[in-house]
Image 1 (spheres, one colour):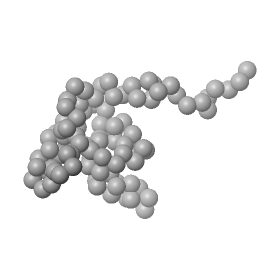
Image 2 (spheres, one colour):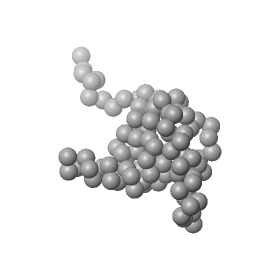
Image 3 (cartoon, rainbow, N blue to C red):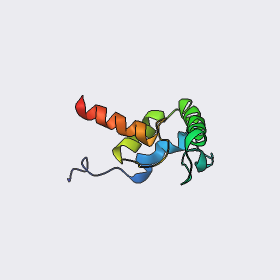
Image 4 (tube, one colour):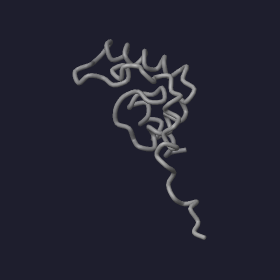
Length: 94
């Protein structure tokens, strides 16, 4: 009998954690900035996104997903793109 242990998981199983996220049904503009957004507007939007993330039961899964795929936009797992890049750099040097 062939071993199937090394086969990738079904996509539904891999991303099923998203169904439990606090952001389900929330407008995506809370997490992703418009092209020209800068300064106080950006900080306020990111703070609102991070507040949702702070109460999310799957924040760890969300962050690990964003780090694994090198998500280049938005707030994921409670961190902005710059914060995620710093975390990845810290993991490399640790």
